[in-house]
Length: 307
Image (cartoon, rainbow, N blue to C red; front, side):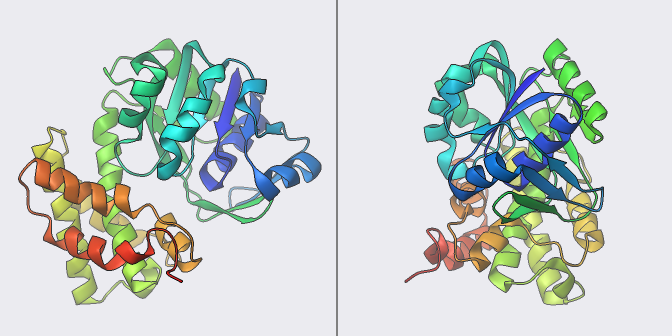
């Protein structure tokens, strides 16, 4: 099984290293100091699940040198979807599945005009990890799951084979018959948590128990639920309850990647999280005042900390 990981950050690096350790032929597409470190020293993963040192690591900055693969784990930031998506074409054959593991809910829609509907398989990453230095990724917590599915809900051979490869690699791989519902369940939680914790500049453990903050979380969750239902997504009746339960039980140091990027002064994915929710709310005539306010307050930081 040949797998290309495009965007070897916390998510791509974590999943890719595990799959390589499980026997898959994995090539990482990366750049800069992280690529140089992987090529010279290998890729290291520090995790409560166990540490991994992938040496040697197959890595390059040129997708054209890799050739067609069975799967692409597409893990770039949301602002790079179209540009990097076009560069994937040499790796995409007739049966290749490109698994979109971005935050948000529209990465697969944006890739389809570039790669074709057959190539794109939406996915949901259940992994909290980040690059702490070039060549080193640190995972937070022990959860590790990749959910993916065909857009028409069928149980495809390629989806089944990937689920089996994930299991062999030691983490949960789930072939979902309703991947858009799974995508929106994560979006419901992530869009809200990313904005609230970015505004607070604090992890979840510092915010729990504050009634005002918990009311903000709840209002933000309910807005995503309302927009999702208006958009025709079959969300379960307890969708908001699930998000509340996650926030109550997440490790106290848990903080979404957008809040981490903001604290580092980096570009943030706000336009595709709260910004996307506000856009969809307008399209479907659903009010989103909580996300609109959070989007406005965080908007000056979209391209990084203002000079």
